[in-house]
Structure formats: structure tokens, C-alpha cells
Image (cartoon, rainbow, N blue to C red; front, side, top):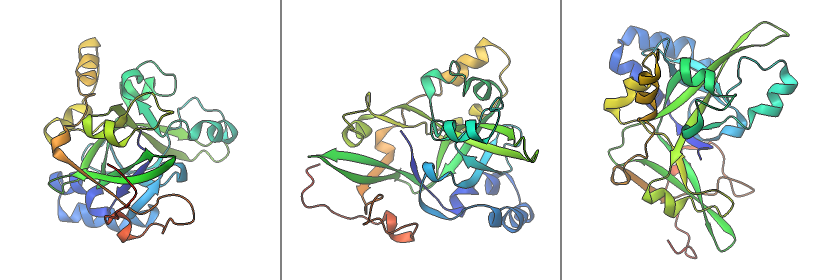
Length: 254
């Protein structure tokens, strides 16, 4: 799964810088960054942070969105709160089937750029956090689904998103070994050369098949991983830059 990420401003702006200009970047920083929760050296999706996504309707300009997809059919905030924590991730194999995701899978896909993500390894009754990122230091382009929901009390439109997941690669099978989970999972990381395809408009079954073919495990040899400070409990230091620094656990056999 993918419940913990690192998202710096620079990583989040990767796509905008590639396709835009400095004036556009300055405008984003001036108007949108103050409304976001960036920078996020570590954040749990269960905190429902606000960060940038690149939706299919504006593929080169980021939009602020809250982590935890709220489908358009949610009636009120009570139903929202009951659903929110269940839509942080969307299982890639079933996004076109599940009621919470199928509309977004067809019409509202997005990309979320992050520095890396965290996963917990289970060993002798304890969990040990790992940080995973690209070996070349470039941001990860995570496939996502988004939705626009109107608050019935205020009429305010709220953008929300979910991170799509897929089967874990060999590295993830060693790290993500939760005995309660049905096999290792990992976020759907899009290779740079295929990212645009995730945002393409879908009109027929052939287009749907093209999207489904992108739901693959990211190559293990392009990722690196190391253990970090605790991300839960009293030992958790909070959202600080040092959270991604390597920390060795003498008792951990890995």
C-alpha cells in the first residue's frame, strides 16, 4: 500500500517546471503553496494533507487536492468521514469496478509527484520503517485518481485524490511483509516516458486497455531503500527534514 510519503515543493513542481515557465512557477508558489501543507518530509495519508496533483484536465498546471478521494455521490460530511480513510489508495486491478473509483478511473486520472514513500517491515513482532526513492534522485510520478466534491453545506468544491497501487516488486516483497496483508503492494510509479499516457482521454475499451497496461510494478533496480526513524508513536520526531536519514536497527535482520 502507500500511506506515507515525502513531498517537497521541488518534487511537486517537477512537471510544471518541465512544461511551464518561470512566471507560471512564481504564480503557483505565490498563490497555491500557502494553501498547501508543503513541504511534507513525512506525512501519513490519514492526516489528509493538501498537496499538488496534475489532473487530466490541466496536465501541466498543478491543482491543490486533499489526500483521500471523495466520490461525487457522497451525500454529506458524515458519509465523507466514514469513507475518507478507505480511499487513500485505489487497487489498480479493480479501479474500473469499485464504486468509489470507477468514475474517476474513466474520466479523472492524475499524477502526484513525490520524493519517495515509506513502508513498514515486520520482524519479530515489531515494525521497522523504510524509505524508498529513485536511485537517480528524481521524483516519483505516482498514478492517481481524483474527484471534485461539492460540500452541500457551503457549496464549496473540494478536490480530492487517491494513489493507485499495484503488485509489489521483489524489493517490496522483502520489505512489505505484513502478515495481515494479501501479498506485497506498492504505489503505481509511472516511468517518465509513460506518465503522459496515464492522463490521456479515454473513449473506448481500447483506451481502457491501454490504461490497464500501465498498471505494472516499477523496476526494482531503479529504486533504493533504507531504514529510517520511527514514523509512529512516541519516538516519531514529526515532519522534519531529517526524517529520511538512514537509521540502523542492530536487531533487524534484513
